[in-house]
Length: 245
Ligand code: GLP
Image (tube, rainbow, N blue to C red; front, side, top):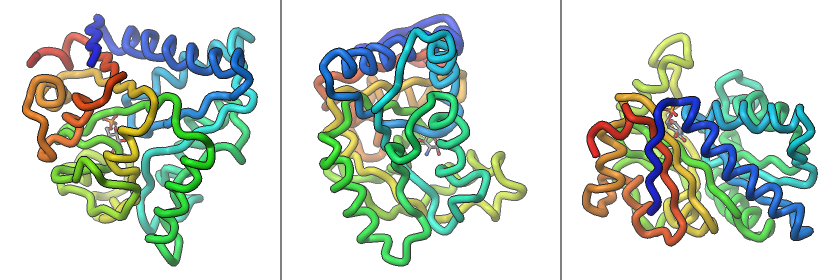
């Protein structure tokens, strides 16, 4: 695992965006457009803003790029402003000028959620796998919505959100009760199959999770510790998030 400690949130976004842009450019050069794994949450927002500014300046072209989101709430209509369908459209698809047909988010309102999870796995494989998976980390060490305890071999599946995660995400809803209880998330086994992993974190609230992920034992109690198993994982954090290392 490569760990890069930079000064602040802006530097995290810049350093990470450079890596994502590199993968997009390498895809264009090879004739096989990049397949990105994208994350929601506040952590990657600066990366998306940096990339959008490169695109507006004609320094980056995302034509043909595909993207797969990590997760989605169950039971929230895709049109709900806080569904990850909506969040991804607002923060990634539109600013990065991606073809909406190439941006995939699990369908959390499917009448057959198990079949939806299996279809999502097939879609990732059908696209040739993910070149670079962007990740944030939850304050309890979750990645995607792989809460403690999640199997390292897990695939895309239905999960119950941890009380801590529901509390953390309550800020996006009118009340804590409105935060969905279940979700669909790519599994840890799914995430580990991406060619490269890039996790970003900033702020003191992430310091404990970052330390457990990088230095703690490999344990399903801290799902992010699974990055220790990946041959090409990079973690970019600011000084505050690195405080417990
Ligand atoms: C959310 C998402 C994760 C994200 C994490 C941290 O619930 N499902 O993909 O990484 O929690 O969110 P934030 O970046 O806002 O701290």
